Length: 291
Ligand code: SF4
Figure 1 (tube, helix red, strand yellow):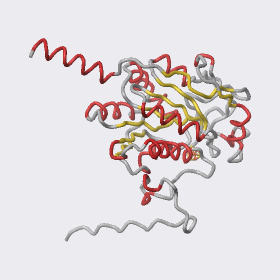
Figure 2 (cartoon, helix red, strand yellow):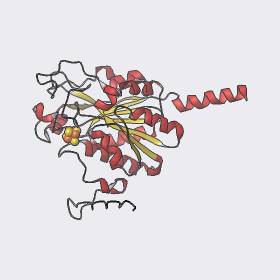
Figure 3 (tube, protein in one colour):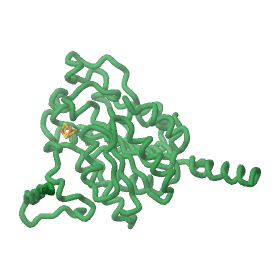
Figure 4 (spheres, protein in one colour):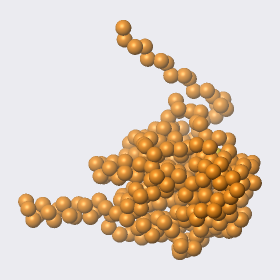
């Protein structure tokens, strides 16, 4: 007897009659999403979708690749070709996709823990090669999905479930790491700067080579409540008080230090041969030499 396929549940209407303006890019059968109230991930996702809309990019020509964690859900919510990959491996999946289909606009959407802990080596080598992908990293300074553990960007003295007396490790400065590894477009915004973030994503999507945007984002459930930013809007108020917009600053001096002002803006925007361009040049040279 053939197996009976279970019927998918109808989508509950959260606010009757209200639709998300970017709904055409969302897999609405996956909604409501799993993200907590006050989380910044929805703003990050909307900024990306508005960027796609305003650039008029055919969503059939976009592939979204995510790793593991709360940010890993991006891949499941966008109505585009998307891959929810294994932990830390979003970048090699993305590079493979781009090599197999260079016409695709390949976007990695993942978190600080996924991209810079287990995935750190993939990140630096994709940047070094100037691989033709855009990496959007939502940085909420901890491992949110698994309970709020210390991660590679947790600031000094910040409290997490694994640093209850304050973090004593040195964190990564992501924009400096990306720039020194060879990324050709590097920017940082917060989810408070939604319009500037959207414009930056538009620039990155049109910029050849390895593009990196750090998106500083609230995690009230795990990071905020352990660090005196208990209410959902507290982290956004913190960004309003402390973020200073400056472009062209040396990323080496752009650390995010608790209680101090930090720089947001565009750090790097340069052009150099991309991995695909160099790969094609070499294969043409070899074809001419060996026939
Ligand atoms: Fe967002 Fe943090 Fe909740 Fe994850 S745990 S959905 S990052 S608020």
